[in-house]
Amino acid sequence: MNEVRIDKWLWATRIFKTRTIATDACKLGRVTMGGMHVKPSRLVKVGDVIAVKKPPVTYTFEVIGIVKNRVGAKLVPNYLRNITSADQLQLLEMVKIDGFVNRQKGLGRPTKKDGREMKEFTDDAFFGFDDGFDWDDDENPLWTEEDERNLEK
Image 1: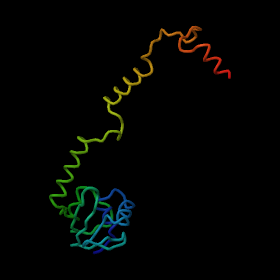
Image 2 (image 1 turned 180 degrees about the vertical axis):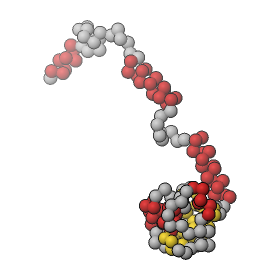
Image 3 (image 1 turned 30 degrees about the vertical axis):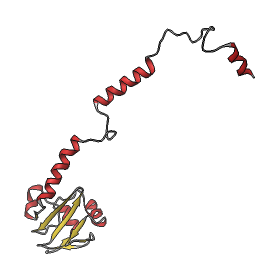
Image 4 (image 1 turned 120 degrees about the vertical axis):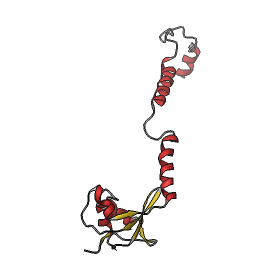
């Protein structure tokens, strides 16, 4: 056993959670070897360098062992070496930090502050009018007999 399908190897070394996701990544061109996109059936052998794009980072792995079945997380270093460049790892750190700091308005659930502002707005808009106004009063200055006659025409 000196060769195995790339989708199976990516799944077995825990780069992807399921083999289906690994297969789809290959089909979508997110997995490359030597700068070329690979099909899920491509065979990998020891010494191959595989680049996996998981936006926004492109991880690079060197195959140092062949495995067919999924292995435990502690055994993964026996089958691959992570040779991802430092600038890609820095990009990952920046995205992690930036994701919490610069959340765009309107994305995700409203914050507590957003909820308080919405509640304050609706309270003022719908319940802040004068409750002492009598809507059934016949002497309503806003509606006159002339308005009634114009309505009947």
